[in-house]
Length: 315
Image 1 (cartoon, rainbow, N blue to C red):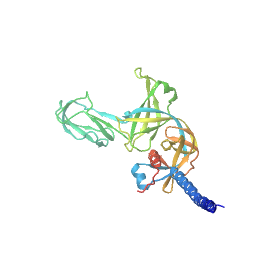
Image 2 (cartoon, rainbow, N blue to C red):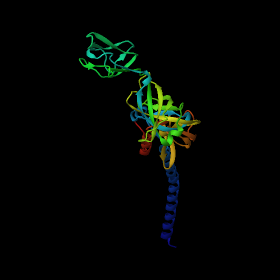
Image 3 (cartoon, helix red, strand yellow):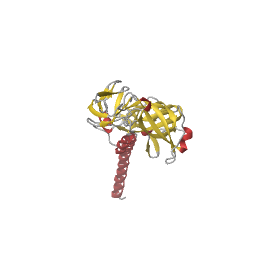
Image 4 (tube, rainbow, N blue to C red):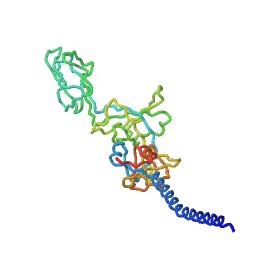
């Protein structure tokens, strides 16, 4: 009998057993590590940590999902004008020379305030030009020593506590605009829109632009609307209440999924959402976000970019 061969076979068998046992001992750990890494990777891909400081620096606006109103509307462009029913032109009664100028453009005046003093050419005696109402001097067409007459206003004074906003309505939309319609006017100052009602729709249109004028008389006590500047207005045609809504700017697309980034503690979590109706500002959420959830409403693309990096925020 070849004892050397038998011994060799026994050693090979023992080695195989030991190798197989070691593999069995190591494999579960490797599988566990792989599964853990996969879970951690998935967790990282569905959330991102952003500090309050970074949120502020990036200009990310946080808002709460809440009931809202969807509006069917049309956008109109217009110009702010002084309210012509609260405006006076101050014209000299007699021709003469301006001897004193008391008020300038932008000055606030009370009814009866002296605007200028004119020396009459006829009598060579001075008389006063006075404001006929309280308001603001918006135009002045005279200077010291200038000859003035009743042919041209020397000052224009307007009460700017109300203004006109004249909107251009094109032919295709004229049938949709009526007196009394609600319009939300945006003065482009970063504040909420100003609510007003259409008070006048011109019965005559412009042949050049194929449009007509629609006017809103707007309260302007805080002077947000300045005559001469452009303003846009969203004319409301219909409204519908929704149970949960978020701002349109909150929606992002990730791998063909529509998502919203919901703030949970220090993390933004990715929430897949189903949406219903929408308008230019608000989107109805039918699934995925609950009323009261805090979400990234503006600059949400920054959260998406941080999510793509896959690294936690350490700021």
